[in-house]
Image (cartoon, rainbow, N blue to C red; front, side):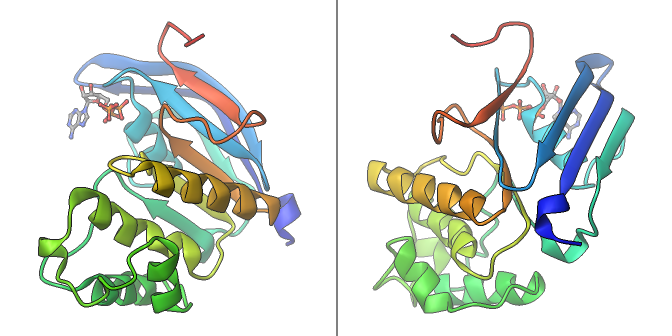
Length: 201
Ligand SMILES: Nc1ncnc2c1ncn2[C@@H]1O[C@H](COP(=O)(O)OP(=O)(O)OP(=O)(O)O)[C@@H](O)[C@H]1O
């Protein structure tokens, strides 16, 4: 199946947590090469939605259907950077690359996120933004058909934001479907899915 045929269909999706409805009747269809920005107030259910999409949260009603054999070809970066404090930046990236079957030049990826010179520093000695960059470096390893990114811009400085914008646009240009949560908009042609009553201006 070519990546062009990749499609995500969501229909009548409803999710409750602690007897509160986070969202109901959520419906959208996303395709290869598109960028989807998911917005909403704190607690609106953005993280929950991403976790449903990647199969980490199973308590919902409605339909989530990936029209492609995806398992090895989806990259999910969660809300936390997920780096191991005792490992160096390089060891962390090698570890997650191996775990997720994602080959690539680890040092070049660390360089791409401006961690040149920090490869051998234990993550415990890195700043919050640098830890996020270690996690984001995976976006510079082998490409995936789908990226699901939970608040990837958190703690990233202006230069990092520009690099990440470019990386997301390049990946989408190569056919990757990108779904991400953030209030930051990657570009004008990004599709927006807002959770909650009030849509931003
Ligand atoms: N582990 C949990 N157990 C029970 N309820 C939870 C849990 N995690 C989140 N919730 C509930 O689900 C709601 C949605 O949480 P979620 O993390 O999806 O929101 P969010 O839109 O990503 O928020 P934020 O912008 O603050 O990151 C929260 O308000 C909370 O009430």
